[in-house]
Length: 350
Ligand code: NAD
Ligand code: DAU
Image (tube, rainbow, N blue to C red):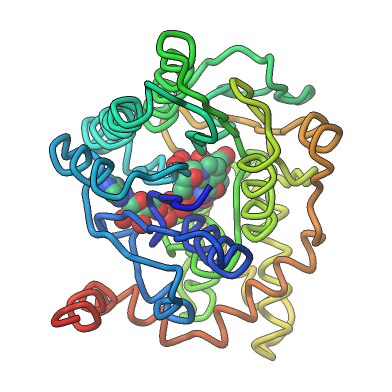
């Protein structure tokens, strides 16, 4: 494969995937297709933006005509699809935006890929990056496997579940060669500070309150984002068509315990009195439809592709906090909105 388009490459996970592929596969041309919503930040890719095998394409996956034209023009051999609206709380406020991007956008990509290659699929692959939230919620025990039935509870997870179904249907109906992965909560550098970990790091730095939803007894399985990028590489190159792979960190934390660990690490790193960050914890109104617990059984990807996380949570969290402390300018530009001008400044007249 020579031409790979990665959608949503300016976002959190996408930027790590783009960097990983650009550096590891100099023989590929990597196209980062992103419309740059509030979550897209090209500053995430500053270090590789001048690489000869990297190209940025500003486009909206919901634009049927533009997407068709781009596929016809560049003839992408592979698609790694991450572009999405990704924040559950935003989906509760504006479900339609999630349906549009996550469902219609995915359909446009599938159609354009099908029109390009349906006469000969050899060497082609469509990789849809999805979430463990499609499975709904677990009780206090059990794990999500690839066979767990879908039971999404939020507009976000419903839109991702729908897009997963469309991908599968294109495999069954048109023979489109696809793989899907469903991953647990990611954390790491470049995470937009609306999600739990980066929001709380930013709030601790600024001595602002830490809004824990409900009683804080909700459980998530956390995976370091660079380990997710490695897993995506494995699935893309070595996964079997028409297969789903669950990806997880073997790393379950109750929100309140995670927040307390984060507080103590931040106290240490900021040289603040022990216990001072914990005083910022405030219990607030719960998220509607809040899923109690996610936990992934990642045995399949481990057994079939030999993948497992490379860092422990304590290591990953420490690296992540250090990154935010060392990149206060990034955080500042993201929270003030200055990063939105980066595209214009960098790409005008190039
Ligand atoms: P993100 O919100 O940080 O980034 C999304 C990116 O998609 C942004 O760069 C944005 O500009 C782009 N985008 C949005 N709408 C677009 C459109 N219409 N056209 C083109 N580009 C568009 O998201 P993320 O957290 O990096 O998640 C990436 C993918 O991984 C998503 O599909 C998400 O469902 C999935 N996922 C995320 C997590 C997680 O913990 N963050 C876990 C599992 C799966
Ligand atoms: O499981 C994978 C999913 O993980 C991805 O598909 C989503 O794109 C990603 O956003 C993430 O969803 P969550 O809803 O689990 O992540 P979030 O960081 O928003 O919340 C994590 C937990 O923390 C959740 O139980 C809600 C809680 N929370 C979150 C925020 C932002 C709080 O208690 N307070 C907060 O302010």
